[in-house]
Image (cartoon, rainbow, N blue to C red; front, side, top):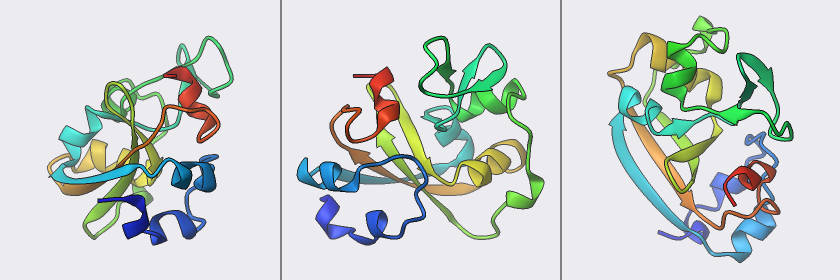
Length: 143
């Protein structure tokens, strides 16, 4: 599937990471979908949260690292927001990395589900685009 088949993915304004939608569209990325459990997805998908040790940081901090959601939950690196648990099938939008993927939206709901309902099903929609920080500054860690 191509990005042009899912225009609503990038036009809602709900995605809060600094994704340059126009540059991404120019690369005509492949879009893949998968259904799995939240627990399985949490071992492969990282939220766009960076930590310097156990302190919350930013992608611009050279000492900061990005961890999988499973690691964030297991090590209690981010406070759990129990009121963020959805009562519907969740879909995650992610960006493919060399190993795993970077979550683009739904961070807090995914965080809560990882901790409280890891067996829940989840649909993962993954953009397989360029590892270009001009598309998404966070990608500078992997380019």
